[in-house]
Amino acid sequence: MGVPRLGLLCLCLTAMLASSPASAAGGKTLRNAGNILLVALPVSAVGISLAHDGDWKGLGQFALAAGLTVGSAYALRAAIRIRRPDHSDFNSFSPPDVALADSSASYLWQRYGWKYGVLAYAARAVVSYALSDAKKNHWYDTLASSALSFGFNYAIVTRYHPNRRYNLSVDPEPGGGAAVHFTMNF
Image (cartoon, rainbow, N blue to C red; front, side, top):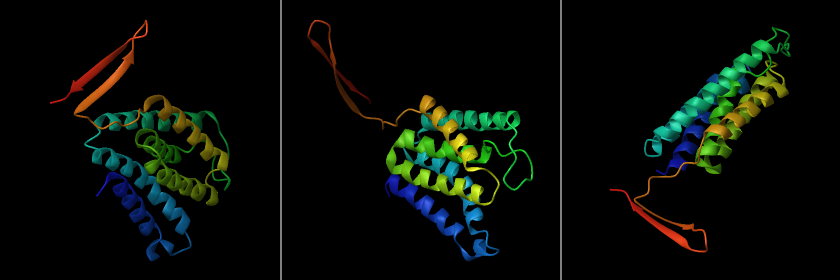
């Protein structure tokens, strides 16, 4: 099973769990799906990284970007006091749980491309909509978390390139020449 199919399978299983009759009881299906996806997104990011030949470099980048994103979300939440839509408290701005989901989606897009990123962003949109629909956060609060995670992931995460046994590159030389480099990994 290819790695893109593995990621798709993880997210589809999560969606099936979220829409099960047990979670539909009480009319909280959307909120339950959001809660499940909050956990499934970072777990999927780690699983997909490990499925890519044990991409430990990517896991380190994900941990750093996610840590900075969630830490910044907590700091912003403490500094900017906005009342929740349900009037329960003043902790609406920049939800850390959405920041972790955003960071996972941004990481998958930045590291592995659109084949992973589209599904992850769709799952992240469900999380954001579920929190807004439950009146736990304003839509612009979740947008702020998304902006934080995009910025950190853009600055930290590099594109995944599988280990190649052979590598050939051509570099231009001053004066019109070219240098050919050939490397082979054993």
